[in-house]
Length: 420
Ligand code: TMP
Ligand code: ZN
Image 1 (cartoon, rainbow, N blue to C red):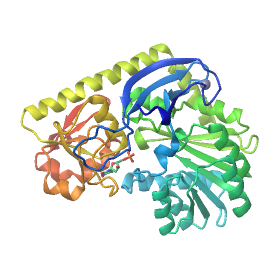
Image 2 (tube, rainbow, N blue to C red):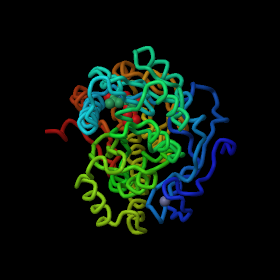
Image 3 (spheres, rainbow, N blue to C red):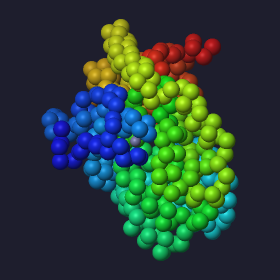
Image 4 (cartoon, rainbow, N blue to C red):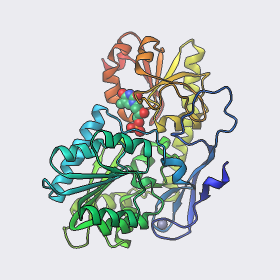
């Protein structure tokens, strides 16, 4: 463990309590997006404790250890996917935000964690003034080149003030899959209050803890994901910071997510969807000891069955490769103890990852062209959140006798016959 870059969680980042219930501990694990150049030895590769605890007071699920964001985000290899699924999703997010915030041409849209600027490009196309804020210097340089103005900064109260002075108030502030990565929620929400127009909307997209718990999809648990939110916990958070969560959409992306819409109190009526989802969480008794035990049992089952299945396929003479070198994928491989002896390579469309090796397992990443020229017998579906799209795209591979292993909710093999 690299003690200087990590600290254990003490107080709850939502409610301030320090009454944690232990959920699961995975030991020391390398960072999910820390791809490495191929080398003869990887002795100095850092690994950090990974586990989850739950706040008995507000039911926030949190990782047990927070890694310094300067280490995680200044150079970042996660590039927003240009997949059909994600492109369609971004159009949907833009439509919901446009409607709920009453966006008109000329309004200011600010996105936190704007990555390569793909989501902001949708708003810019429709006439909004857009500004990204993202600490990853390699990605903001790219966004600038494609014409999306982006500040290479973390979003703090002083960044918010500077943006407000330069551009005026924001009609929409957006944080897609960045909110779960933020430790100082109070600082970010203070910045949001500073920058948001009185009738503006803050739209937040997070992986939904209910999907994590129900699907046993433990591969969303990695150091970057500090928080796993229930609706009830989000509601508590925004109320504590002088904001009001007024609407919600449940979405299929990234294995199950929420898009919550937040404004200043009293500006918009709270929709029924908010109360309905909170009531469903209460009925399902999520956040109870029994609920977590069931989740942990499901996690153990996948951690036993998946490597056993892959090893038996290899023992039968099959060559296995991974499909997608996603952060989720590197997490499953590390937590299931699968390495290059079982998984020959992982194919991934992201240039930044190609020809590097995966953190921890050191499995090489290959381009889709390489994979087509040298296909395996079986693909382990690591980017399972895009399974429908990938299975459609790989019809030829399936037709030629290729198979896929899907990891969740229980490892299964699919072949062309499965679709007849
Ligand atoms: P994500 O789930 O975090 O968006 O990551 C998905 C990863 O899978 C990303 O590295 C891109 C990769 N990918 C492929 O290689 N091929 C595909 O067809 C899709 C949809 C994703
Ligand atoms: Zn709490």
